[in-house]
Image (cartoon, rainbow over all chains, first blue to last red; front, side, top):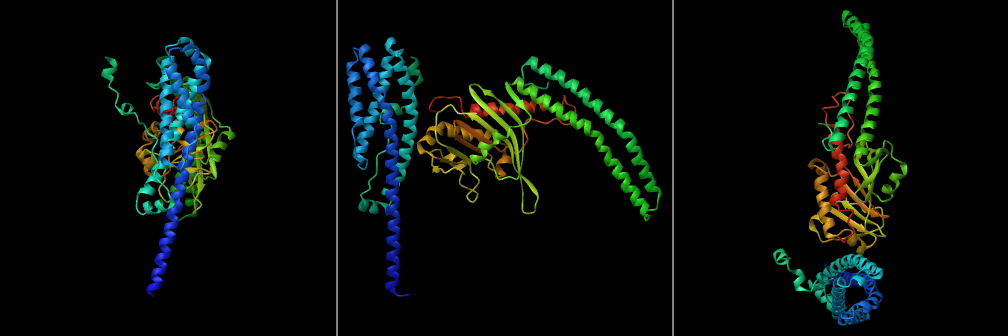
Length: 193
Length: 314
């Protein structure tokens, strides 16, 4: 077989292989977008709970103005559109949603000190919906992290790293617990002291 | 004491009833032998007559075969015992299930099987046997189940059993709208896609992934239903429900599907459940009631192991 034929076949193999890898990268990036969309659907359900709760809470929680204003601000931030292809924008969006989740949990904890608010049907229903939505968010988070793992593996492992540079596909951040205190094992002795 | 899984008054009640039933069984055997005696005499006479002839004589063969045929025909005198056994079994089932808080019927409604077939939980079959239809609740979780066996003819036209176990339908506590299939692995070449048009879901628990394949119409909903704790519980259920022989038989023992607000489970136990008493052994000593209670306990154990009454996200 002539040398030129061998070179031709080799070039064809590299081109076809490279194309297949490119398709795989784009597919995985689209899976990450799909997963991000799933998270946004659940986050929207969560922050749609807020307006009614905050309106009701303002009547009772006169000393918690800072908390309520913070929640409203976080809600606005999470509702802002963001570039789903930009890992930095996605990271900022996930950070905002984490902060909103922490804020809502703090709100429900503080609401325990206001019996009239705690027993209000709006708040009770909101709390039940919040818990159900949290289950869905946890599931959406697992789907997102699974899709990101597959994408990041494809982008960071050679020769995917080269093809990803040409295709402008970047690794994405994971949606994970950022609060170091939440990772610590619970010390029962401290709790019981 | 039989029925040790029941509380004391019920165990005593079962004991008393079993003693009465044992009396009936013995009486029926006495009647059977008494009625069969003339037949055995005829068979014995034919046998002696056959022995009296020379072996090469054709009549010796005819008399010998007649003697055997007459002796075998005596088996018809066991019919009353078989009928009694069926009535006793029905009565035993009714009593034990009622005491455990379930309703029981010997026949299974044909419409109960249809969803299992549609969801691809059953093997291919040509003949089926359904019996012992049980309904009730395990705590707040409604449950319906039936014992089932499915058979198919192989290439040599011999009937082989593809499934013997339980088909169970539990009410699911979590709301969901799609279909999520959890199938035990049958090996690389044996993996066939589920009947439902669903995508493969890859999960985080390595032990679970080694044992099961998950498919779903919704990736997020699949993870909502199959949480990390649920995966651990499925692995535990696998250990609890089966002994080693069933697992190495490569028969795909557990399939489960979340669909239409329920969890549908096919448990191929490779053995019958809800013991049928034998007409040949003492009813008070053969432990049928205890086996029965153990099998009923399995229904509750599955619901508890899988934590089916939990409304929380785990």
